[in-house]
Length: 444
Ligand SMILES: CC(=O)SCCNC(=O)CCNC(=O)[C@H](O)C(C)(C)COP(=O)(O)OP(=O)(O)OC[C@H]1O[C@@H](n2cnc3c(N)ncnc32)[C@H](O)[C@@H]1OP(=O)(O)O
Ligand SMILES: CCCC(=O)O
Image (cartoon, rainbow, N blue to C red; front, side):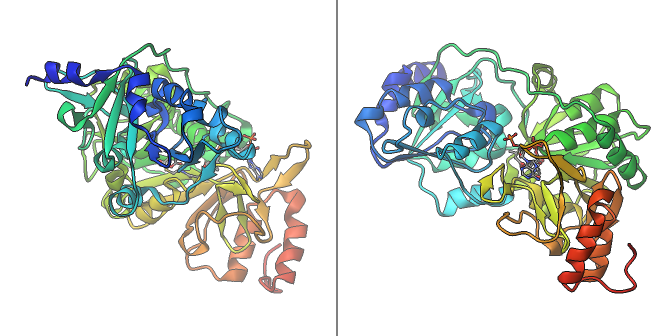
């Protein structure tokens, strides 16, 4: 049978396709732009026929009809590997549960441990060879689709087609059903406003950065802003090897800096796993031979990252304690985001020849009551630790950069307090004294 005939034979309406889902099933929605909008709507419409259907997603921007239609969670229970701001708001409402993980092993979790009864994902239209491109969701999708008992694809003509790497496509012969329908154009992701504090942090980082380095910029407004500022610097011949491709890389490209010339693997290629940004970004990565998408089992593998000379990883966090522990994913018991690729890139970049792993933050934040709070705290109570103190290298704020490696507890306390906002330093020193990590010789 030729691929077009096979496509027609597998074509269903969304309502028909979701009939395969049974009570108790595990369903996967892949990630971000891969969110299956029409199938999600059709599944939610079956609410009263189904119970205990569990759904997994990852950095999904929503709205998710399955979560919104069932506050009781008798019918649908939604889970996320990494919370977007929408999924965070679902968690706040008790409608989403976080699943702890590290990304480079995520596909192994699927391969060895997890059940996927039905996987549903948005893909590009099928090509003449019978392949659908997994596009900006390639990072996480391949193994989910391989593990699924039933694969339903939703064709979204707005998705960019990305060259791989590997695992960027699925063939019609590996698909059970295909659905089509109208999709609105993707909204542009918000662009962070660059603040004076961002500029100061970028200034503090610049002496550590070299021409020819390869950059990983993490999720969130600070890494994005720092990427934009690096695009304005004199640095040149930069490389891209990142889990998440944001508009900061488009800025580096537009500034003529993203040549990938000195990459020691994937030379000449901007490597990514997932992309989220503007339509201009999607247009840039679409069918672009200088861009290569890979599964995160490759992109985030610390051994792979470590093979890239001068690999620089720039991620952000919510708070740091005086021991050097980093909390990036929860504020007390409130789930904010996830571990994501932070630990993978910390581990990988710190083993690269000339590599450096930075965790950056503003020294303070303004809480919901309008009060200025320190991001340097004496010690964590209920916050989840994202990066353990044994693996944290460079920490940066607008007050400087410190390297914690090889530093004892009292040296760390001193170094970390030097990054804190001056308003909070005395109270942090008193806390360090009470915690027995402060000596008479410590600098105030
Ligand atoms: C992507 C790659 O290539 S892999 C590596 C990157 N991945 C990671 O580093 C994972 C962990 N890091 C992250 O998830 C992000 O970088 C974050 C969460 C630390 C920062 O992301 P941003 O989007 O810039 O966070 P933002 O400042 O908007 O804050 C998010 C929420 O946390 C709240 N928040 C921020 N700081 C604090 C704090 N110290 N205490 C309490 N709440 C806080 C904010 O108010 C906001 O809540 P809201 O949505 O209700 O307003
Ligand atoms: C999918 C990107 C999330 C992260 O690693 O932070």
